[in-house]
Length: 362
View (spheres, rainbow, N blue to C red):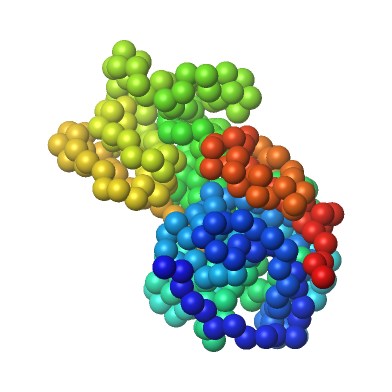
């Protein structure tokens, strides 16, 4: 059942595209943003990436969607107004907002710059502000957000590629850093070659790792090695390849959200190796504990990243020229893009050209 939210009219008019029911079909939608508060940053949205979770939310596949729902949590643009107490931003800055737009600011996780693990964090779309009003995301013309949750985009990083970094980028960057898999010379495996997987390859290579892409699809080998720069490719359904690669990897970033066996992946790890799960697998998976014990191996997880780390990731990406592969689309193509996304028909992230194609509805 879709959730219900408090609808409050604010004076700042806005427009975008919204889903109105679990069919997930999006259409033009007029709504309102709050006035710019003393700690707020207002910006004109120019681009917004399409994440797979946007599809889940539009269709209420997680049972938490609030309609009408304006998706989008990979939004970037240019600052148009700042509040009187804003310290980090000025009009004209390139900025972005990722998956979160608020948190409690008082728990241990928030104190440790881990707002992504705050029990009360607020999602940028389909969430609720503290006053109960519904959050609307980046498939829209503008955003108003507290400066704490706004990220500065370096001038050297094109805005059209910056949006997906705020979600897919930090989602792979954070575990590579936290689990110590960011050291030059390490051998890192990446399971899955989609929106997250291709970013994991690029960041791991930027850290100086030797990268092996692990996939069920043999036809992705050329893409992985020739285009993305992976060092090797492993077909996970080939027992001979798995046997030959046993005990060769320092860590594995697993981006697959469908259920799959973990035992073969654990077998690929060296002693003290780490298997980090990023994909949201809904059904329980078998955990072969003995395989972890033999070699003191670790199985962990990670979810996006805190705001401080997101800024660090964006700065790193700009410095090392780490960019997602994107397909830019007009806003009126969004429903077709959602259909293609559901089929895995994108290489590797759709980005909506909000600035040039979103027009006010009557």
